[in-house]
Image (tube, rainbow, N blue to C red; front, side):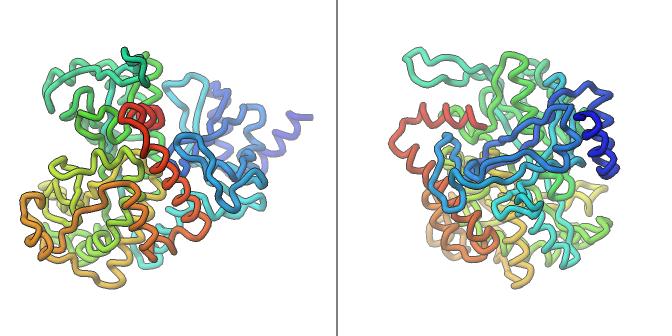
Length: 467
């Protein structure tokens, strides 16, 4: 009975879904994880067994609505419509199917959260990004993006004083030093092979400034795929480390006295056919469209950082003189500005013209952070916002009067301040919608409160564990 039912389900599936079922059989996959990112930035999901996968590709897996009101500390928040009553479905996108090289017998798909009738749920993060992409598409614009993540590699060990576990870095290499390549070589090669096997092509890799800190970036792609890729990236960085008896953390500050881990967000806008980069003016400079996009990002940046740097731990990283972009300004190759205009590569000027959003890290839900940046940039385009003059120095070296003249404001210094700015930003709140915005604010305000009376050791442990 079960086999006949599964065969009937398979015949009703589209070709992409049927190829997933074929790969599951050929590769000996036993469990397929249906993954999503929650409002706390945590990657969560459920797994379907092979025998029922054909059915679950259509129906998804049942899921309580309450999980999108869960904080990163697994504390459920009181949000209307997200309590113990009610269910949605975790519905996978078969086009995102990847076997997991670091987890034998397992695979994963990125998923949408849907109502029981198959319509998008108002709190689905992936749908939020899809809607932002659709708005740009209506203007003839196709967003291309990439996250540029850093992570800390080490071993999770008990604290000798009896406090929370701590992360002991795998190396104390200098920035970009060859010793860092060698000390992390076995892990790095395993990570590269795992990413490439999942269709995530490597852009570049190097040991970073902090002890045990490394940066490995993958190539840009269309916006939804970029966010999907970042979820797979995060899972792979950690999964490979776990299988090698190590611990990798993409948390902004898993070690309080070391440099922070960013996930700089690179964005450009192309035409509908992905033939021309509309941020490139044909002369090696940023186009008027690109400048207006910057204008929108800067106008909304105080509230945006509640989505791009959304954890308590983020604000240990988001400090002046940290190359984190703590001031709301922009400049060509200015790594202390919140928005950097990246110098294009010689011989590949059009394709490589892009903006880098620096106050961004991997504690963010990538669908919400990228979607919100696109909404802000589109607002700048529609209103033809002028970003003002570029800042050509470290803004922290300017006097307060000089920064005020340039409109170069210090970004929120705490998560609570950022949430206040988000709640006051009508464009972003309207884009998020009533259910999503209420849940997001509730979850994030609870995290700010829960960490307020705890020490640094507790904070860093909880963040390295979650991210």
